[in-house]
Image 1 (cartoon, rainbow, N blue to C red):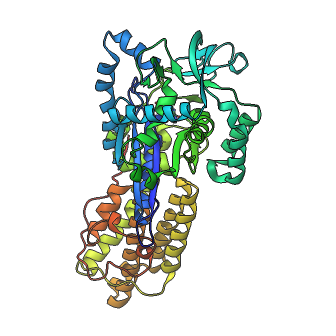
Image 2: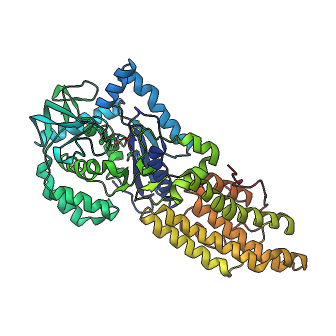
Image 3: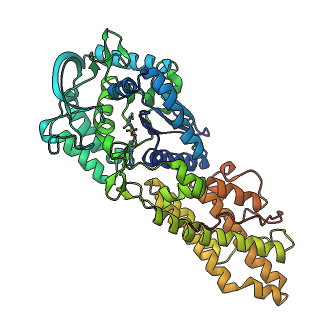
Length: 511
Ligand code: MSP
């Protein structure tokens, strides 16, 4: 059941669930930060946001990692899963829930879901012989390999033969093509959509959804010698967390999901296997799967396997949470591959946050505190910043429709630049010196109001600085309590409030 008129609109966004065999790195944090900015943005619009993240704890990879450490897989994941929860907290991620695939609520849902597909006649027993990459937890054909190795991890694959239950993916080719034809927006960006269509058109092969060679997983309800293949289990987290097995009303409120945000390496699972399995279980497919590129270092994908891992905690310590979020959202295009460079991060922090944004806030607050006795003058109904604010809001809104965080932030930056040049033009310090109180108040009133709108629009990306600025402007609550589109209208404040100049919002970093 979606919303009734006047009720908050449900909005459901997910990150992939992460393999906790590894410590979290900036690649993992990347999707979570993006999903968080989107969740915050939708909350500003008054949506009832469900935002899910979590850890993917079954499969051969976990079993082997645990064996190598001489502990049980359960002990391993109980130790490592919390590091992903802590990562989310350390980045101010506002997830509504954190799912672990070892939880009973997930087991129950996976069993119910697979049973439904089995009862509907889309799963049958067969023998599989294939080439398996444990790092991907996926099978490859000979021609998909690169120099005989896994195309993603550049490591040897293993020949595996076993009796498996197969999901009849091949029966869903036409249904998937019809679906993507009717809903071009269901896979984004466009290049990824083409990739998915190309893959389906090549012809789909049935894939195995169970294993007998391992025990670390969810047993199939009709044949418990088999455990569910880790991907058949993992994908289902998106449904188990919203009550598939326990609360159908809640499930129907949030499903189908609005956005699955994922990395491009797991596109096929999300845009081919997953919708087909949902069709087979009589459920609707995701409204949109959005696949971003990889963060690379010196042209290589960052991963534990490559040995070039950067930990978010180190960067947060140096740049702060907002500095971190700003870099990965506003400085990297969300979609194509991006190159991580510390020098670039430092340069942009200083130029954009310390100089442009920080200076505007500091200058305006300082002048208003000393020239206007610390009380915010009223913004004028008309003036150059009125139009600039409207354009900024429209720009953010249009860019967020396409999850183009960099362009959205660019629109906020245009407003900051407009306010900075307005100050240069008007020279309020001269007006003040000349004793023109009315003109000084007018200029500063306009700038303070522009700052309020900047804080509001920037809050999904740099929530701490935005909230701090809000408070310094003397406004009540925080940006997150505001509702768009009304709150973006010019002239809502901070007239008559008590201002606080405070310390620089983004101190320069000299490293
Ligand atoms: N457990 C599966 C996902 C199951 S979802 C039902 C998995 N886990 S993962 O931990 O290996 O990767 C999780 C996400 O992190 C993927 O979207 C992957 O693309 C992303 N990244 C891992 N390394 C990355 C980069 N270097 N850059 C950007 N994202 C990357 O796959």
